Image 1 (cartoon, rainbow, N blue to C red):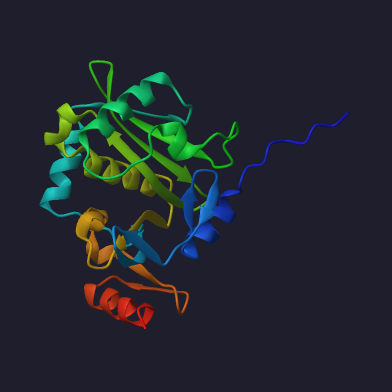
Image 2 (image 1 turned 60 degrees about the horizontal axis):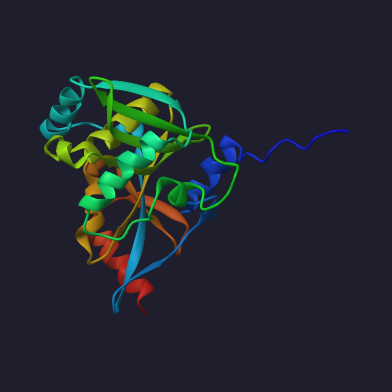
Length: 227
């Protein structure tokens, strides 16, 4: 009797859906145009980094040098108690809404992961102090989630992990890194522009086109979506 192999989203399919403004949620791909926060509704603007155009400034280079003090390990994602314990410490330290666990964030009850997910572990003296989880396509990478021990906040590990993921994507000769979205008039997500605003593109969902990022373009898209 033949057994049907578990479903895995092909890398080229993930590349395509990311290019259409979709992103991972649990074990699905979704997109959205609006984000409700309290009684307000804000417009969402999806981003990607053109890796061939990325040039780092002093702040980015400093974080990459800082990463050299840690031991980095890249491996296929496997849900472990170590990851969950680190995430629990991280979640207790943040002031915004986040899923209760890594399992909820990525699997939400599913027993099989349909994405080709990997984790970049950051360790000091063998202890896990930060983790960056991403999905790999054929030519692109989706950033998905970063978390860290609050005692290491002074090292800006969230931003450091974004840069380390992008460096891994460039090592693989990928074309784009997708960090998620920014939100018009709601700066909590603006950190996603940190790696290199000049190499960042923003998705025009009405024309289904990518354009060089600027806040003026985001303002224009917000106005069009708010009609």
